[in-house]
Image (cartoon, rainbow, N blue to C red):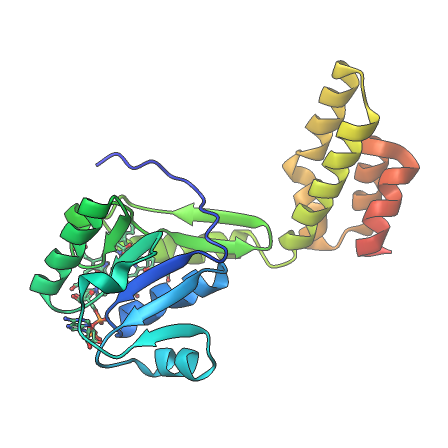
Length: 220
Ligand SMILES: C[C@@]1(CC(=O)O)C2=NC(=C\c3[nH]c(c(CCC(=O)O)c3CC(=O)O)Cc3[nH]c(c(CC(=O)O)c3CCC(=O)O)/C=C3\N/C(=C\2)[C@@H](CCC(=O)O)[C@]3(C)CC(=O)O)/[C@H]1CCC(=O)O
Ligand SMILES: NC(=O)c1ccc[n+]([C@@H]2O[C@H](COP(=O)([O-])OP(=O)(O)OC[C@H]3O[C@@H](n4cnc5c(N)ncnc54)[C@H](O)[C@@H]3O)[C@@H](O)[C@H]2O)c1
């Protein structure tokens, strides 16, 4: 299967999760982190989901799957341990043209969930197209070592400096030159190492005093 990778704006949109076990909990957790509204349908709930329910983080329906519970969904996750229910959820989703993740049958997923390295605005999504989810997880752990938390500040700086370049430099060649320096990965290493002098030199080359002011907010 050749998948089309994309990042979804799921903020405030309803995702219906059928099933309330460990896998449902993992999917709900990441959906909530992305700002989705979650409706969980299951007669039994994993302890993490009980906590979400008690905190008012999810809408909980204490019942077995019924098609009407899919009303209003942008996405559906079928995370039960019952193959017949998984089939019914998938068929209803197909009929209604709603993307559906069937956690135990890759061939019945109209979307699959990647493993994700999260470093502020930087998200590195990893998938094996369903061949080895455990491998995706281990690749994530390796990449997390290469991209420590401090890289989040670098990404924030890059965003601000890029706006500065776009707003201030009208000459195409100058803009290109500044963007090339901006995106040079050597500067990422300066942030990882806490190399203030390197960061200042980088900023100065990009946009002089104005750029320096921006990075000073992060590194004095
Ligand atoms: C990435 C991650 C995202 C997430 O779930 O948030 C994710 N699975 C994760 C972990 C994980 N899943 C499984 C294990 C045990 C080891 C192993 O089997 O490998 C572990 C490891 C663990 O739990 O430690 C078992 C498993 N998974 C699927 C099946 C069904 C099958 O393959 O037939 C079975 C067998 C069930 C059984 O045996 O009954 C199916 C899928 N799992 C996917 C995603 C999609 C493909 C992703 C890709 O393209 O790589 C896909 C197709 C559908 C989907 O779920 O979207 C998350 C890691 C998050 C992280 O920590 O970074
Ligand atoms: N995709 C993945 O990442 C992944 C990882 C591990 C396992 N799995 C597979 O995912 C499935 C779920 O795993 P789990 O560990 O969460 O299982 P689990 O047994 O902990 O949970 C299953 C849940 O489904 C609910 N349920 C059963 N029938 C239902 C129905 N008709 N309507 C609503 N809810 C119903 C149960 O109440 C329970 O809460 C299993 O088939 C497992 O093999 C997938």
